[in-house]
Every structure is written in C-alpha cells, then in structure tokens.
Image (tube, rainbow, N blue to C red; front, side, top):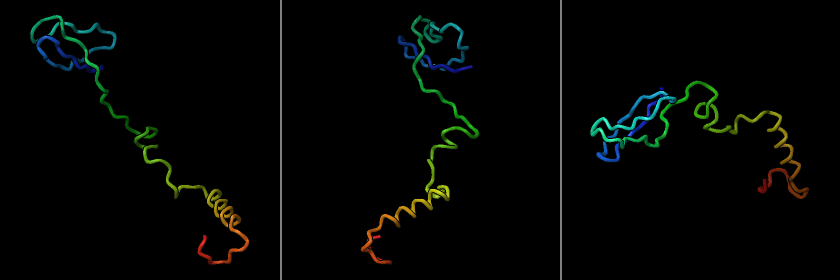
Length: 94
C-alpha cells in the first residue's frame, strides 16, 4: 500500500497516511477536524534492487577496456593506415 503525504491548510499539521490507491482521499484533519487536509505532491521513495536496473547495470556506462577485440584491432589498423607516407617509424606525430 502506498504512503501519501498530507497537510492541513488551516493548522499546518502534516502526516503520512497509508491508503489504498482505490480508497477515497482523507479530507478531515486529525488535528483540527477541519475539511482542509489535502494530499501533497511528493517524490516516491523506493529502491529497485537486483540486476537489470539503471543503478546496477547502466549507471557507470560502458568502460573503454570492455571493447571487443575486433573493434580494437580495426581501430589500430585504421590509425596506422591514416599515417602520411612521409612519416618514418617512431616519428613524433603519432
């Protein structure tokens, strides 16, 4: 069951109320008994655990060391083929 934040606009009383989603909203303030107790907009507070969630699988992004061997080999081949013909082995430009 979800927990909702409520606040009375008359006396300022705040409370967390556990209610079914299908239940009617609470309107009477338990402190002053006026009909000014309303649901507040609040952020959900739950944590998804296990694998397959952003925090466990995607938050850090792909590491550069995790490249497949084929892509690393093709990158080094393209870098060596991009060198100008006038460069000698061991030059400072690569």
